[in-house]
Image 1 (tube, rainbow, N blue to C red):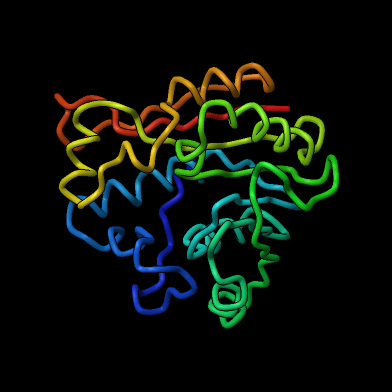
Image 2: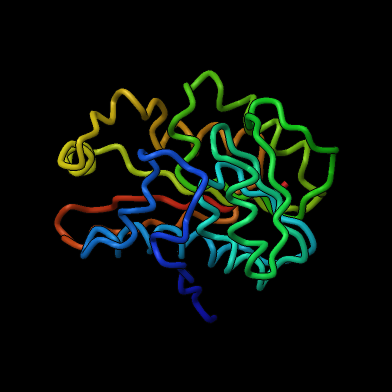
Length: 214
């Protein structure tokens, strides 16, 4: 099976997000490889179809790849500037359908999407919110539709990595990969998990991709 390689614009072309967005990290040596790889592993799980929803689309870094697999790309994000992000991709012949909003109360019809994608989003939810989020995702998925998520692993190595980047991750990440997987398994049928290992093998896994089916 062919593996997706993330198709990036130049850094200065991205727009519509605040300075805390991690897009700059994608272009750093070594760390950039990890940031790109986690997205590529999620993209590899996307089976294609008519409609995909990405929750937490940010700069739209996945959109060039997703446009090869899906007829229409929808996006939902709490803070990204819908108009600015959409314009970046409209200039490249894409027409993503973007809205501001929360995974906890989504403005979409039941049984609509072939796929729902969440990359580094679910760890920001409180554990008590995970069930509601997954219920909403299940509601908007077609029967047999897929949910793909990626979350960082909760371990000492990852906490140190974020600390070196200037983040006390305990103030931003509230749900571990274990809590996310448990909540997802109560609502969806598991296809498989894909672990992503550190570039330093002794440090173990740094990311986990979950693939589930409605």
